[in-house]
Length: 116
Image (cartoon, rainbow, N blue to C red; front, side, top):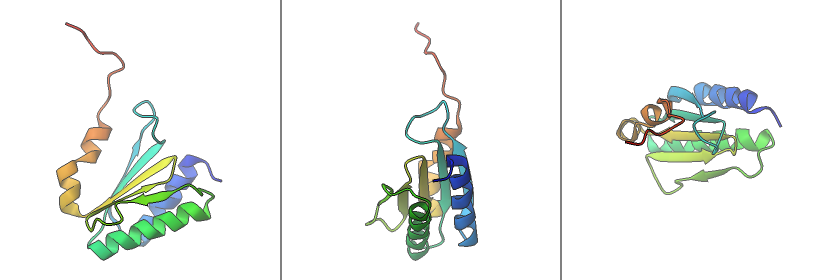
């Protein structure tokens, strides 16, 4: 199995070569323990989103991630591929804009809370 950063680059390449739009990577170090990286991309149609999620899923499996899974199988406008160290969200552009995951996860999370 590759290092998370190598696998992240393979997934980005796979998404790019299959015409995913607006691919963004967010480093989750120090923000969350759910994964090392989050990748967010858009598809052009429900079929495109489905195809991208299946291609990413196969790429993860081919790289030794045997416990990966696809969430949102019944959704036509969003899929999440859980690659253990990588979380990949594939949206239609409208849903992506609504949820604003890039904004939520890209902001700095304070290490301490100030009590007043």
